Amino acid sequence: MTVDSILESIPPLAVYLVIGLIIGLESLGIPLPGEIALVSAALLASRHNLDISPVWVGTAATIGAIIGDSIGYSIGRRYGMGLFERLGRRFPKHFGPGHVALAKQLFHRWGVWAVFFGRFIALLRILAGPLAGALRMRYSRFLAANATGALCWAGGTTAVVYYLGLAAEKWLSRFSWIGLVIAVVVGIGLTLLLKERTKKLIDQLEDEHDWETLRRHD
Image (cartoon, rainbow, N blue to C red; front, side, top):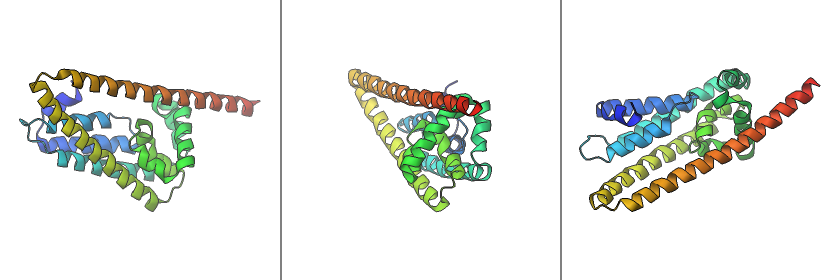
């Protein structure tokens, strides 16, 4: 069963609660498909036969992101960087040394902007809250960047997907499916390219981490 079919089978109020919960848990540091859930809900809102409001989808996603990131921040502040070492041993696919090293590098370079733009990047969306807390970023600065980033990401994604869904319905009703196919292919291509570049950076940082570990043992 897909995320789309699950959301379509439940009442609108439950849709908003599920979206907020999934995105909140992802922001807290649990690897869940928050972006997929948001896109699916926004697409459902563009269908006239369903009573789902895009405004409430975006609102639920924003609130979930802010609360989840804030809880993640508190956890990271309490347990420090040791938290990521333990998570890395249990979940190396999401919290491996390369992932954490890349996130730390972005935080040290961009500071509070890493929190804002992290909302748009899958890797940082999971790590931003706990890592900001572990690195002792001031909470007032974190909250400001977290809230504005969540609002731009959730509201912007919902609006774009919603209006694309409306446009797609018009295109499909006129049999103009070629433009839709091109848009989907371009979107998938850009996503794969970004994932590949991120993976290369992570692999490089993991190799550097392994080399540094060997040097320390020597």
